[in-house]
Image 1 (cartoon, rainbow, N blue to C red):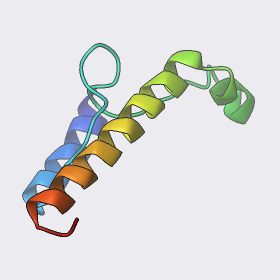
Image 2: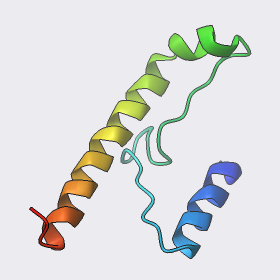
Image 3: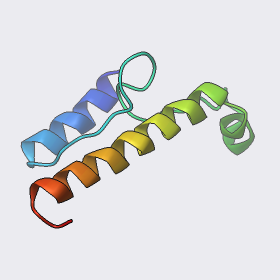
Image 4: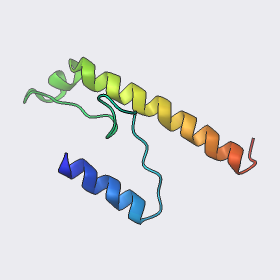
Length: 73
């Protein structure tokens, strides 16, 4: 999606490390679809919740890797 790609480009331009959940559904990070039912729709979006979990897992692994590389462990 173009909007998400623009956000990722902003991160890269500003020397940040964007983290996604990997291929097959979470490559742009955790995304949800409310189906126009606001919070209730998001809570029922199992695929969105899965993409968020994958993204958070990868974020934790990336943070640990950076910490180790900087000798902070």
